[in-house]
Image (cartoon, rainbow, N blue to C red):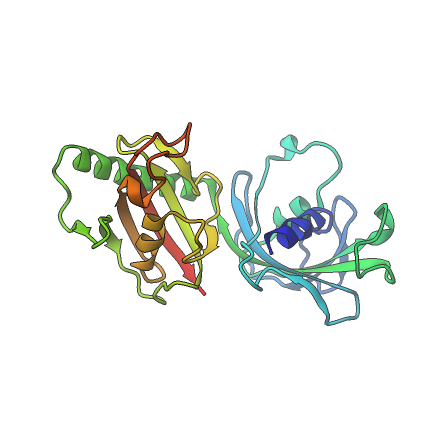
Length: 282
């Protein structure tokens, strides 16, 4: 599924348009045609903002869907809007469109296949490909920075307390040895093994040193809860929450990357600290 997502997103990079109030075929500054279906009249993305959107791919005049970001475990596509003077090379139709769309807007972008060296599989008998796009969320650069700053503060305070041997009030220990502090339980669907979940996270070593975070990417990690490729402490921690929940985890090395660690990022026998935010459960 992830392979298909990458292929489809690469196609999306060729097929977006610019916003117009009329429900008629319009043309972007880069020359790509589109039809605006809904204009929610909200604020549009600015340079540095991250836009999240859903997309489907279909033939013109057909209801047959070749790809849909809502199906399966595909991650919601997102794009950081660059500054106008930072764009290089040929005009990007997706950037043309996302610069002027607000949350809730939807449009169909028409891509002329004659400009491709060869037509994509399934589209050999048509001259155009349709992409239906809906903007789901826009996160401003300021919101992203503030969100990450608060997470970093919580992780650093948690790491310092654990290192000093003065664990914060409310810290619990599971039968496996996982130590966890529920920041917010969440009021949505409970996470259970087999669920497709989206999780924002910040991972650090016991001294607070960052080794990985979704906040720098501007998008959560999507996976199936219980995937054997995940470390046990992570799976157990996410399983404690409902959608909308947040927690701080102290994962002993035997529930993390074990005796070997994950060199050079994670040393041998290293305990781990994670801040996790369960964004969705499906």
